[in-house]
Amino acid sequence: SPSLLERKDRQPAVTLTADALGRPSGSVADDVVAYLKENPLPSGIQMTWGSDIKRQNDSFGALGSVLLISFLLIYLIMVALYDSFVYPFVVLFSIPVAAIGAFFALNLSLSNLSLFALLGLIMLMGLVVKNAILIVDFTNQLKAEGKHFKEALIIAGKGRMRPILMTTLSMVVGMLPIAMATGTAAEWKNGLAWVIIGGLLSSLILTVFLVPMIYYLVDAVKQKINKRN
Image (tube, rainbow, N blue to C red; front, top):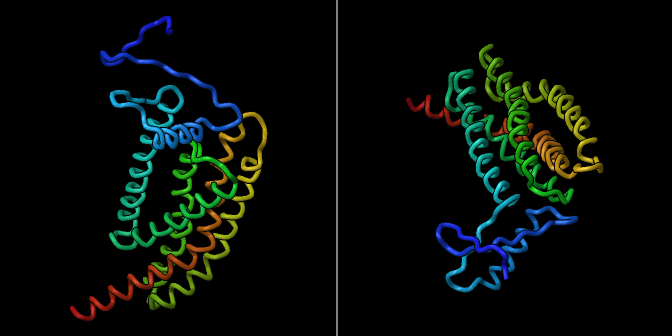
């Protein structure tokens, strides 16, 4: 029998502790949750997480809010810069594309969605938006010079391909030592590096094609609306 009678919220409580050796505590917690779904606790008994799992859940919730706030801030800053509510949406289409590559890289490297991986997602948002901004901003400059938006998109895509390629590959190569590290507590940082590598590579491959396509559709719709008016 326990040497100490615990109570929480005026209810009898028992604290169970365990160490996760050789596995992340989050994956162990997932196994516990899966087991309890198949073998529910008796009525009147509830389970709450503590220690590392509680801190992880709290951190994930806070970082989710940070991701949303950073997304909104990026949009509002671009609205002020472009003096338009439409073109920032074109730029933001690069973020979902990068997220696909980030999660694919995490699965491919067998890394977990840790706190550092979420921090990598926040960093990734700013990095991949840069590629789309290079294309959209140069296209707007060419349109201001009198070029048709279709011609401007083709010139911008060709002209900005080299700087996008150089900056993306340099960042990917710089992250490889962190991604491949095997030292003490290296698995904490591996996820951050793989998120950035996967997101940047997918952004490099897809954003160069997706952003001009979205821009073309937006300008085509705007042109039709202007003709009707």
